[in-house]
Image (cartoon, rainbow, N blue to C red; front, top):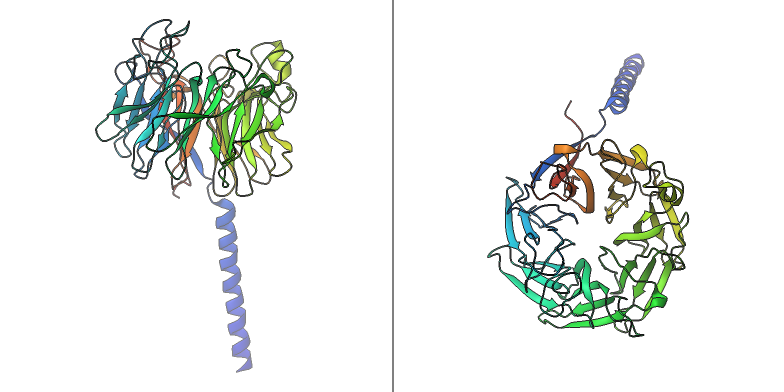
Amino acid sequence: MRWKHGLLCCLLFMLGAAQLTQAVHAATNHPAARVTEKILYRFKGGADGANPLPGVVMDRAGDLYGTTSGMHLRKGPCKRCGTVFEISARMHVETVLHTFSGGADGAHPAAGVVVGRYGNLYGITEMGGRNCTTGYVFGCGTVFEVSPRNHAEAILHASSRAGGSWPQGGVILDAKGDIYGMTSTGLCPSGKYGCGTVFEIAAGSRKAIVLHTFSPGDHANGTPEHRLLIGRSGNLYGATWNLGAGRRDGTVFEITAGKHEFRILHSFTGGRDGIAPNGGLVMDRKGNLYGTTGWGGGWCINGRSAGDDALGCGTVFEIAAGTHRETILHHFKGGRGGMEPNGGLLLDSDGDLYGTTAGGGINCRRGCGIVFKVAAVTHKVTVLYRFKGGRDGEHPGGNLVMDKAGDLYGTTFDGGENCPSAFIPGRGCGTVFEIIRRTPRR
C-alpha cells in the first residue's frame, strides 16, 4: 500500500509541475495588449463644425459631447462661430445640438462641455453675448446651457468687462449644481484692464458672483484653456499661465470654500520645473495635484526655435498635498516621445495618468502628436499611440475620457479630411477618435 501511495503522490506532483509549467509558459507568451486607433467621426467643415479643440465628455450611455471652435473674426458676428455636438455611442453619428450665431447666443466655444445631473450640457463661449464690445470681436463671452433632448440653448450669464470677460477653460459643477469658471481678462484691483476672475453661478440663478479677481501680484494674466477643480473639501484649484520677461511663468492656486481665500501653492520658475501650466488639474485620493506645462523642462529636440529648444518641450508635474512641493514626473524631449502637452490629464482608479501632446511623434512638420500614459509609482511613460496625420488625425488636444473597458476618447484639432474651413488649408477639420486598449484573442 505504501508504494501505491508513493506512486500516486509522484504522479500528482508531476501533473502539478506540468500544469505549473503550462501556466508559466502561457503567462510569458501571452500576447501583450494591442493599442489601435479608431476614428469615430471626421469633421467636414460645413454645418457639422470644424476643428474641435478641447476633447470630449461621456454620459452614462456612452454618448460623447464636445464643441467645435469656429473661426476668429474681428469686429462683428462670425460666419462660423462654433457648435455643440453629440456622437452617438453605437452608430457614431454626429448630431449638432447648437450652432452659435456670434450674437447674443455666443461665439467660439474654446472649451468643452460638462454633463449636469439631468443630462443638460454646460459650457462657455469666449466671445458673443450682449454686455460689451471690445476692439477684437463683438461680445465678451457667455456661460450657456444646452439640452440634448430638444437642442434648446439658454444663456446663463453674459460676461462684462467689469465682472470679467473672455471666459476660458469651460465650467465645472458641484454636487448642488452650482457652476464655477474663470475669465482670462477683467478689471484689476488697480483699475487696469486684464487680470481675470474666478466666478460662481448658483444653481437656478443667472447671476455670476466674482469669488476672486486676480491682481498683478497673482501673475494670472493670460489664463488659457484651464478648467477649475473642486477638491473633496470644496476648495477650488486651478492654474494660471504667463509668459514674459520679469514675470512668473505660471502658478497653481487654491481658493478655500466659504471664505474664498486665495493662495498660490506653487510658482513656476521657467526652468526645468516647467513653463505655462495648461489644461487644468486632477487630484488623487491623497489630495496630490497633477498637471502639465506646455513648455519648460529642459532641452528639447525639435522646438520651434533655438530658444524653445533650450526651454524644453513641456512636463508632467505633481504638487504634493500639504507641503505643496513640486515633483516633475516627466520631461518631454520632443521627437517620437512627444512635445507640448496642451490638454489636461486623466487619472484612473489605479493612479495612472493619461494625456496628449500636440506635437512630436511622427510625420507632420513637427510631429502629429501622441497619446501617452504615466504609470503610478514608477512614473514610467508609455506612448500609447502616435498620430500619423491625414485621415488619422493631427494635433490632439483637450482632455481624454475613459470608458469601463479602459478605452480612451478624444479629439484632434486637425486632420481627418480636407475641408473648406480648415485653419490651415489641406490639413483637415479634425476628428473624434478612440484609442482601443485590449488584449487580442489568441
